Image 1 (spheres, one colour):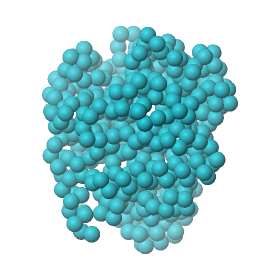
Image 2 (tube, one colour):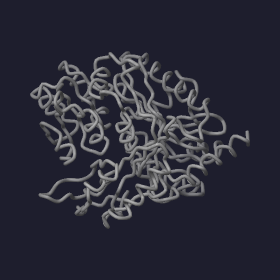
Image 3 (cartoon, one colour):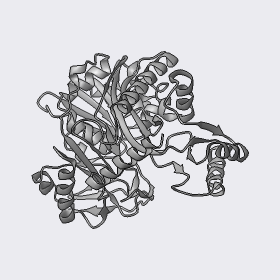
Image 4 (cartoon, one colour):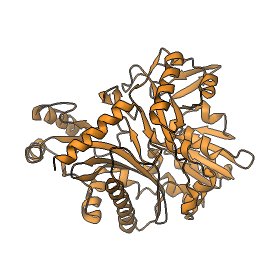
Length: 441
């Protein structure tokens, strides 16, 4: 099986490792924005370039005679690379450009939920001037401020978190209006976030275990928004702060959304759908959708998959997905990203990274490389999320304790991580928070 992959980040390294478990049968051909040394070690061919260069991408995968292509990152989906590949008869794990509007245009997503799904959305309004913004805030209370387009998980500002007063919120809105002419305002949701991702192919939807991502840069949810500092899953596939009704509602919203957008666009969805949800006292709400796997959550999922992942991906690309194809280990998982001190700032400094990968493997963890390049025998960070550790086990607290002991010994001085991801006391606080919120209703 000749497998194509687009992307060079940690998510794509995790996907690459998962699909290449049977190297005697399969070969990997990668097109990315940079050479990821982790992916490069297991790829038969690897090209770099513009992720929206349709012709170059098409030529690369056609020349390598791939059976199908997995699109890992959002940019090529938004600019229609999947459509171009399908025109050439190449199967794709990734929705069309029209379907990708679910992530690429937040107001389209909100309007679809309002018109076709009928539930799961907070109050929202697209505004083009400060008067409308002020009126919406006065009517709704605290709001989240979001650019309409792609943000990579870093472009959201929340009243009560990033600023307290209406005037400060309006100043941020004005900045966004001057930049883009439009901004999306949404009712601020209070509760606990969770990620529910699914494999989707021609109406078949198979949900993955629930994960929780940690977006803020520092322990205790302090600092700026990031692409995700780490994530964990529990052995039962849910979260201790969720009840059965929460999970059923999230799955219902996902299925209704897939049905709605397939009907609206007139095309079948083949790929991944990532629903970021908030469990609130008034039920489950959609924070956003992504039309690809989340990062870091993809790292957890690829580590937990016990299936033949190459066959699973081919089935998605060909519209042949079946329930038995997606089997996950009944274990907890923990992923933590190591990042430069300046992250999520835009540091361009390339920092040398010395880390004992052999010791990581001996301790039962795997390493995922992300924003890093190989310079001779040296690894260098490119300034964003550099690498991640992923571990599996029965209890999340045991994995966390063991990982923290290891990182205390081997973490490079140029990098840092969040210590509280997977911490038992942090999880218990989340459980108590949701109990208290539900009792207020």
